[in-house]
Length: 449
Image (tube, rainbow, N blue to C red; front, top):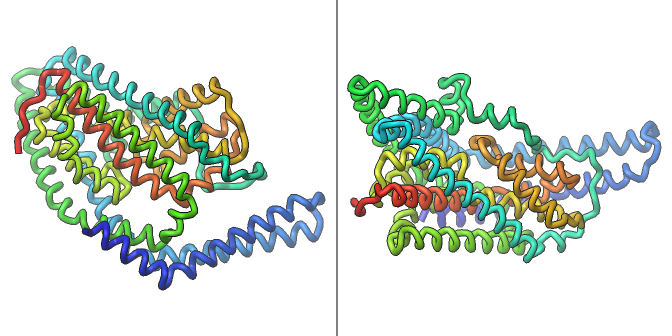
């Protein structure tokens, strides 16, 4: 209900007041493109004409930025609702992951059991990630959404506002290994919290009887945090309402028609990924997979409407335990999934990267596309918590293949809309992973409502 009301209010606000802001911003963007074209024709960069054009461009950009700030200020009452909710979620995710994972690992017991479960978990994650990336690559080659854009190559100095990340082993390791547990908790570096929790949980199990006091304490803390989660979740409908009203008021329903083909083809590919994942889940879980998907409706809708799979984390955990997954498996697999098993984001990365290449008429060979897929497989790990993480990774990857980073600008406008689908898919992928690993471990019991 909040989702529908949010869209309705957003559309009303867009038509009544925000359309004026948008038209001013679009006019400024067109003017900047026109000036860029004139600048390319002026050969002498020290001439008066060149300087005047540069000055005019700066004035247009300044005016556009002022209008954008005014628009954002007008949206504040709506964005405030979703911001409060997401901040509350971030407040509890770190402590929830730490306490539940420590208890889960300690209950598993010996390190060989942790390694066995971890091995099965990573097998699913790597396979699902590869499937998602490969499907994105196949579908974008079938649909060819970028060919309709037919864009000329842009000047190399155009700034998109999104800084890419290079493929660096040092950066990858720094995202995994914490230098301070307190800093990891403060910055919500989930993967680093997971690493520390694994050490802590194994060590707790290793000290035997003395460790039982610690396990009992953290078990109690986890239940307290889950109680807090219940309070926070009562605010979810207001956050959904605010998020949807803000995005529709800002973008308008017109953003759907402008990129309707691209959005439609992307969501078709996403739906196919759902079908494939559920089919694989059916092979392992049999008919229970449909019961699992039924239980995931609320977490998926929450992730979709807030464009945050983190927001659905507590609900996903609760529903998995009710489905019959043991808490020690849920608290082990689910946090890892938030860094290693972002299936929706994986599909988007190959789909979007090749879409940008197609838009500029750049043809990549099959070997280059496979290389891109493998690079994305590595660079996408451990960047959970980075704002616009998918765009950041795409920007860094396409630069490796001499595809203009300015192409990111094609996606920035509709990225929030696509992020909703990615977040929902991430929840589906992680819930299936947890249920499958539980089944493989023989720890899947009857549903408990």
